[in-house]
Length: 209
Image (spheres, rainbow, N blue to C red):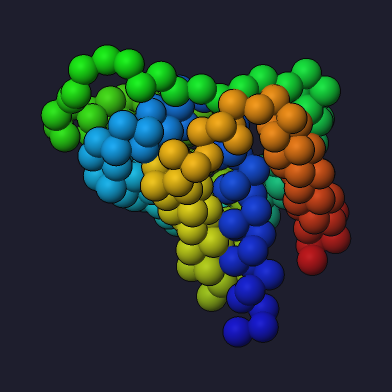
């Protein structure tokens, strides 16, 4: 159990770092939260979709890398490079902050329409497959077999926490998200977290630890 929590936290931190960004999906969830319209359905869909993609990525990559330690090391090095660049971009964003806004204007939409939009924002974004399936999957697949479930749980928990916070805390969070200073702090934390994870991944690739 003592070895499980670091793996859980690694999955949590990695997923949070990737998901916390200004984007169409987050703006849509925030908008639904502000309107208090189908919030639970939208939050559950986004979180479950992420969990399925994460699990598929980890399990699929684990099977693909089982007999290919060379490929596993190459993917680990590529992942470390990606996280280094991602962290640098987050720190650069912190110097030029933006804001996340979600207009409450517009008519009411049905639950089916809300879920259709959530599906489009989630599944039609090519980055979700690069980040969630390939990157998170390849890193999770390199965990010991007995601990991969903990990694998936940690990464999936990040989606539940973030989308739940956006949707159900929208009324309270909207003014905060509209402040560029808040995103400066958040991007700085994301950048440092990504660099720490990149260092751990590089150590794993080079030392096999």
